[in-house]
Image (cartoon, rainbow, N blue to C red; front, side, top):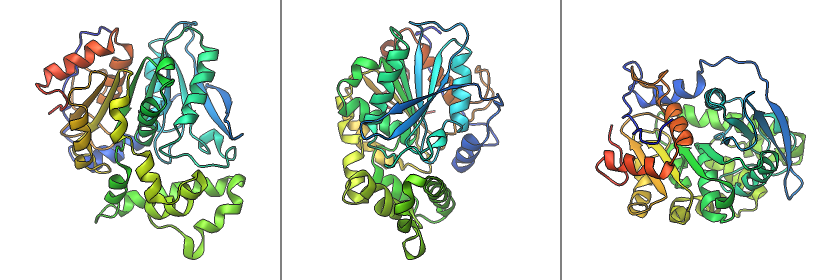
Length: 351
């Protein structure tokens, strides 16, 4: 795919103009129905926990060809629809894809004593080192979805050796200021989202024998009803933070984005119901003159939605094709420059 192509604006499908519909349909429905054929690789972490990589390698791939690692969002795994869709599209272009199960997720259920969280960027380093060993001389791209995007940004900004392993990155709808994103769930009509995430997180804990001694944190009077309560009672103490507030403050990537030295594209929507647009304002200011990180905001799209109307893309999944375009570009720097020039702003895309 040529690097002189510019991103077409996102225009929502006429049936999915509502951000909540974009979010719900976008995340939980996938047209790709392919049998699981990935090879699994386990990664031993410094604290002896394990995480799993799902290796989707197309037949024509050879050492030196492009490799991409995908990181899922909160309560997701390698089977999340967006992970399957993107792996399928990249495989069709000869790209080897590693779908990473974060600690305790998917095939990694029961293999970790510590929970995953927005600051789990050292886990990504371990996975990348293993991928580099298996795929010598291959350029490696990283794609993170939602919380996986936050982990990716923290890795690129806080772990300088990361720039030696990764040649480009793209993150979709990442929370940049965690506390503000969690506060959204306290608004009226957002209870269903909160119940969905909390219920799935608790299911993950109860499935794992590694967490049995901690299950009292999520039973009886301690049963968390909100993400804030869950993080305060479970994530924070098990991950070494004093509280949920401490966790959010220390693991929000907004303030460290200028430290990123790898070509990185952040795509999000102003109407994302789970991430308030106001939480992006500080990033807009910090990245105004940054030559490596591009923030591309559409008016609509929801959270991990971006289901478009008729366009030149092969299917309605607008964000999938922008990710493919970024990863396959001969020069992500040139593409980023053209994106900024096209929008008549250094940062904001108005669809």
